Length: 145
Image (tube, rainbow, N blue to C red; front, side, top):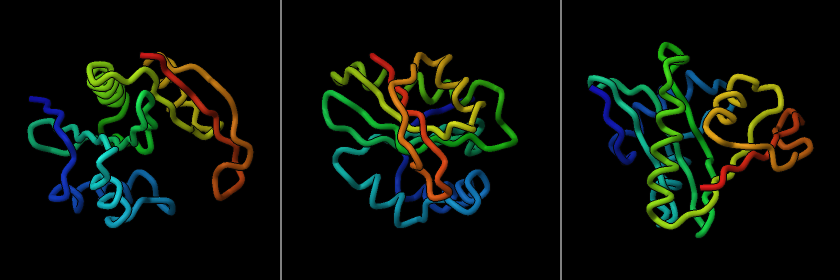
């Protein structure tokens, strides 16, 4: 059984373990997650299958737009549609709440993520030069809801 629910502070130890696995060297800390999900403008989702953490996302909202800050799927569960499932739930929920666009940044070199975003209806809106600490550029992508 798959469940998608809001991410809460009780989930943070488990989320941070996955974060370290998925983003070694650039993982968010427990405090970063906690501070973000405590914001009134925060929107976060946690995906579980049979009670096991599979993925999560964190977004920030400023109506009518939403910015996807973080999305992760456990490496053992990639290429099974879970990332798309999280993005779809975020879009559906956001549309119902009156949001009109979702924005995100993605590394130019991250072709796998870019394909998922494109399949989920995102298009390239621009580029942020030297956006990442290693000076790699980021594509700005958007999806109209």
